[in-house]
Length: 377
Image (tube, rainbow, N blue to C red):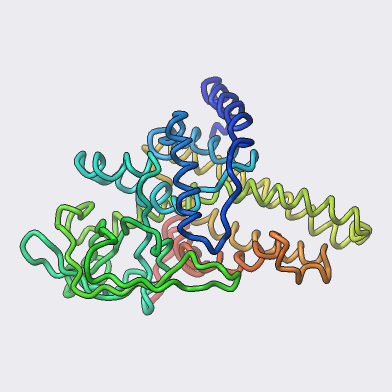
């Protein structure tokens, strides 16, 4: 497996790095974490700058290696995170690019790339989180529309979204993995109620969503009717394959900052802590190499990440939690100061073994699809 970059890819890296160095000092201050309209405007503005500079389409048109370079360099430079554009750029967009019709790609992809529309994710339900295929939100066919009723939870960025990637059950009599369809739902459609949810860290980027006879055009279905589970696996492969790349780079940076802080406050003299930080350094270096391996595999298979993303997601989720536990050990009583970004990151890290598929689900995927073990009864 070749983990090196081509001369063309290294030229892309150099060009991107030079552009970031020029443009980042010109950005306005970031809005308050609670100001979601302001955050939406800020995130869309950054996406527009990427578009105008020719970097907007790397998530879809660029090779997996180019996407990896882009995510690595923007994180290293401290560029704005995708924020409210997360679902559109890293979930729904790649899925539509891979599975949508030419008309669907022409309608939905350019506005995301230009920083004009935000997407949210309507997958999980109160009784269908880890067991996503058990979802019960119903879509009944009525002429050229589906009439959708049900509820969703942990709907990312629903309060500021224009569109929702929505999983619905279109055949209640089919086996649970067979009767699901993937729809693009306009968020201004009558019958949608959104209620923001506040997390442990105090943010409200999730919401619960209630759907009461919401009419969604059949033309908004991506893939065939009742083939939504396969389309969803494409979505989740992107989420588990490359969506966390920037966060691995961020964790490696935080680890370096932790070592500096430990030297300052004397905690570096503890050999147990030094070994812990050294092991974490090796862990994140290995995760970075695993990311490169997954990207190389994706390039060999047409650009869609494979089940190796579950191996990465499983280990990364726990490594991130271990990193911020180590941060609390280095900071001591100061770790209770929620004004410190590290501590807010520590709170958010608690969700990583649940979000994007629980660690238990990832172990099942690894066991069944990679190791070939039999399914549990």
